[in-house]
Image 1 (tube, rainbow, N blue to C red):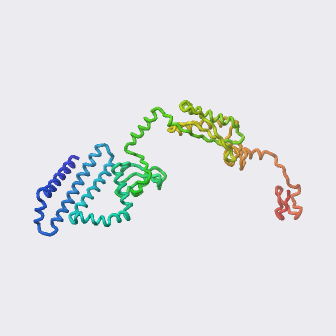
Image 2 (image 1 turned 45 degrees about the horizontal axis):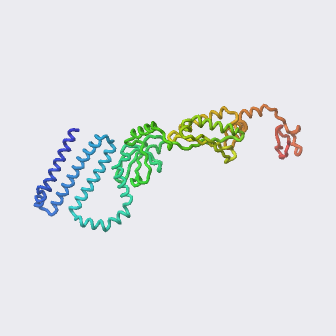
Amino acid sequence: MKKRYSVMILLTIATAAVLYWYFALGGVALLQELPGEYTITFITLFIIVASLTILYKVGAFFLKSFWLKLGAKEGEAIMLQGLFKFFMLIVGFLAIVTQWFSLGSLGAIFAAFGGMFLGWSLQGPISGLAAWLLVSAIRPFSVGDRVQLPSFGLVGDVVSVSPLYTTLNQVGGSVGSEEPANRTVLIPNAMLFGALVINYTPKDQEELIQQSRDRKKLPVSASSYMLDEFVLRLSFDSDWDEAEQLLLNAAKEVTVDIIKETKQEPYIRADMSDWYGAYMRLRFMTLATDRPKIIHEISKRVFKEIQSSRKVDLAIPYIYSYRKGSQWAPPYSLENLETLRAKPQKSHLREDTRCPQCEHQNPQDAAYCNKCGRRLR
């Protein structure tokens, strides 16, 4: 590492010395004495290209080292190096062009055709370039982060961020898991302006998680509570009053602290929107950040109470009730079939199994004649 630092420093000093000799000590005048009409131009171009190349190598090296020492990730340093490389290319392009054309001529050409050209054919690329500049400067995600684009159903690891495309190594897709599929996906940067991007691994993820944990320790304000609902479908033979009391007791047990804070008791609103049972809607105040936990506790209590109650039953679509359905719903349950088989079967066939019309002999349990089709029962 020390050797690389020494080489970079020597290259920087050499480049600075050449540029100083060329522009300040009359190097241009000495080169003009060389034979050839374009000799000075080509030598100048060579000096510009060589100088910018060395400046880029040295600048990229020190820029990466500086950002890594500040605690940035490797991917962020690579993105900043790309931004620096783009800047150096623009400077080199302008320096080379000005050797052949005057700035006034370039301005006239751009004014005549630049606006039409950009508006017609470069709208997408320019939008992508602007998005790349913002992403590289702000760095909402960087190389190596895992991101998700819900609008496109896409999850992937960021491989590179170029001026026009962001390259992802797709996660899942061909396999149903959270493993990289080693299939690259190119996302036009222009799409990043209107797409929702979820970063699984942001650079300040630990700080965000800690802030979320600290927030739970703060006193809860009145604005943190909201109205929630638990819906239960009851069969028509259930006891209405007992069902109401069962639901209210479960909500009061779980949200006792919330009731003290908000002074709002749980209540019931019911309706019969179809013919498969009555909907009992338990409404209660809940904590916005603990909704899943509270609804889980209420559901568990209600479930256990219904299991132990003989007056409250659940209704299931297409079946009158859960308990009755297990006994009578077609096809018959095994218990019901055993009961039917145990009953003596009464024969409704005529004693004479011979058909009275064609006198054909039929089996004893036949209901119709096998020959003429006459009903035998």
